[in-house]
Length: 275
Image (cartoon, rainbow, N blue to C red; front, side, top):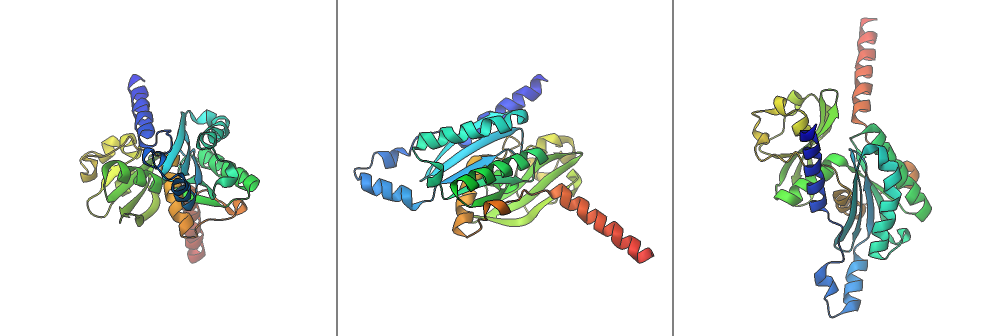
């Protein structure tokens, strides 16, 4: 039990190090031209992002070129901690929800309840502020965190899906992320990246025995988890590409449901063939 607590402490430390709650960038703040500073900040859309896809709940505000963030642990408190953290980052930046260009959320894969919570809160905030929603893959957010912290351009992201399975995907950064292998669900032995990669995510530690000896275990970052800071970064790119949706159309990503549906479809097809 003590080992588990230490692991959680390490993860919290790394998440906070990746996205500390901070003030406006010193270089901008020290500018001799305040009007220029304000213009630069306004030119970059502010994005409010939330993620509750794992045991951690995070909120981040990408404002100008600065990220303000909050992090809380304990899935049972997600619904109670999100809104206070949203208020905190908005107040710290001195803006309102209406000043944000979009509301982003970690859409999954991940905890079924967690991604539903994030989607519902994002929809509620977006409805109230009349803003669009941007759904970001949690695996892509993890890969972005790995890219930011290690400089890796080929990243394999793995998230523990429980029941002996992992959610995983592979990305290439050029420097923006491109999908090499789309998010999928499989047993550990089904994880087959293309080429040399830097791996990240708690799927590595959850199935350490199964992954032992695999090339991607060298320099792997099992401590990196989905965080709203990377969700916000990716959402700004998605917004620029026109990938936002109306609040009512926002949907979580349920890979396990998709697999179950595919299995049911195959069973139905086999029954039709044998009939």
